[in-house]
Structures are given as C-alpha cells and as structure tokens.
Amino acid sequence: MIGPNSSACFYHGLVLGLMVELADRYVLISNRESGFGRYDVMLEPKNAQDDGIIMEFKVQDIEEEKELLDTINAALQQIEEKKYEKSLLAKGFPGERIHKYGFAFQGKKVLIGKKQKLSKNNHKLIFRQKYAELLIETTGTFR
Image 1 (cartoon, one colour):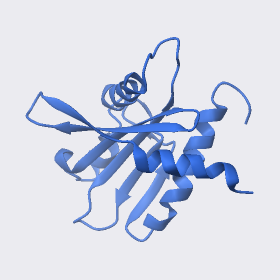
Image 2 (image 1 turned 30 degrees about the vertical axis):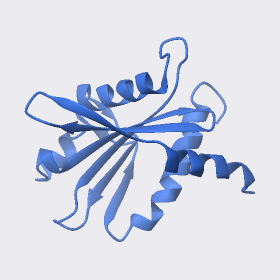
Image 3 (image 1 turned 90 degrees about the horizontal axis):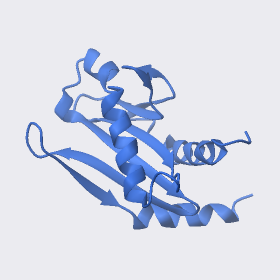
Image 4 (image 1 turned 120 degrees about the vertical axis):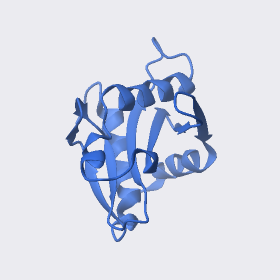
C-alpha cells in the first residue's frame, strides 16, 4: 500500500510478525472494532492468568507532534477516547489487567509508551525505547 499510511502499515505488519510467538498464550486480533473505533492490535489472553494488551501505532506527524513523546501521547489518548478496551471488558477481563501501549515511529526510531494507573485519575507514562529501535534497524537487511 502506498500513501499517507504506508509507513504505519509497514510498522503494523512488522509488529504483528514479531508477535506470532505469542499465539500459544494470546488470540492476536488486528484492526477490529471496539468501543468507538478500530484498534491496531489487541492481544486477548487465552489463559486467565495473562493480561490483555491493546496497542496503537502512530507515525510521527512533525507538523503537529514535535517529539516522539507527543506521538505516544496521541496514540494513548486515542485508545482512551475511543474506549478500545470495551471488547475485553465485555468478555470479563478486569480493567486493571488491560495494558495500553502507544507506539510512535519516525524513520528507524520507535518509542513505546504505556499508560500506567497510579491512582483513580492519575496516570504515568513508562517508556521502552532501545530494544524496539534495535528491531526496527535490523529490518533493512531482510529480503
């Protein structure tokens, strides 16, 4: 696919490919409706002891987002505003066991943030950067 979202599609496909190893523990669901929109990736646990995971991918729009952190915030805000967790909640997964990640991409750089609840209305962002950057940088050698 070529167009404004072609970069996002590449990253989406890359991350989905990396998650194949989780198929024994999770149902991997991509681009399905939940709440008021379509999430990028949801990992629905097959086992009651595992947590649910929602991921939203965004390619940095430098006109609107000065830093990758801004792009992560946009991804996490989209997850919250569109209530992507609704399908997991409807299946009985408790909200505190649903983790939400925003992936921000810019060329070969990626920054991943997680919104973590500290209290009822207080949130903190946690970032993981180096491992994901290394994975993205190695993709150029595959044929």
